[in-house]
Amino acid sequence: MEALRWDRVLVPRWLQALRDERRTLGWKGLLRKRGWSLVVAVIVFYLVRDLILYVVIPAGLMAWLFR
Image (tube, rainbow, N blue to C red; front, side, top):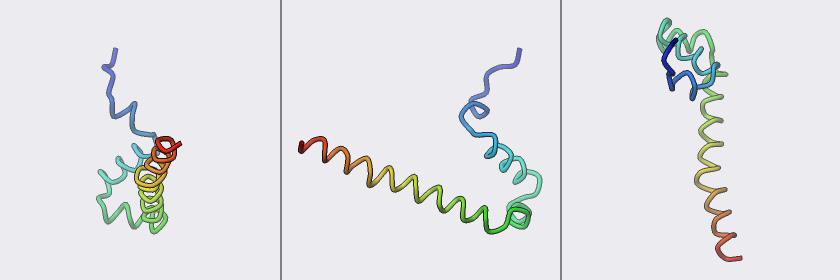
C-alpha cells in the first residue's frame, strides 16, 4: 500500500501536470509550449485570490461586526 502523499491530495491534477512539464522542459520550455495563456491564468488566479483575501473577507467581517 502506498503512503498518503499530501501533494497528491492538495494539488489539483492540472497543476501537477504543469509542474511535471516544468520539471521536464524548464521554465523557458513551459512558456514556449503554453504561451501567454499560462501567464494570464496565473495573473487572474492571484487577482481573484487577493480580492477575496483582502477585500471580500474584511468587508464581510466589518459588515457583520457593525450590524
